[in-house]
Image (cartoon, rainbow, N blue to C red):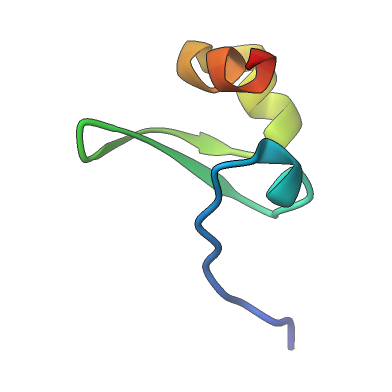
Length: 51
């Protein structure tokens, strides 16, 4: 059995190794995937990563 939990973070370095990252905008999930996949497919996440 694996550990599970939720982490809310303002720094991407805190969540880069998470199994699944949810990206919210205006209270809605707009992207959900791993760090690397989000960098490739989610403009909002990519913008955050560049900050």
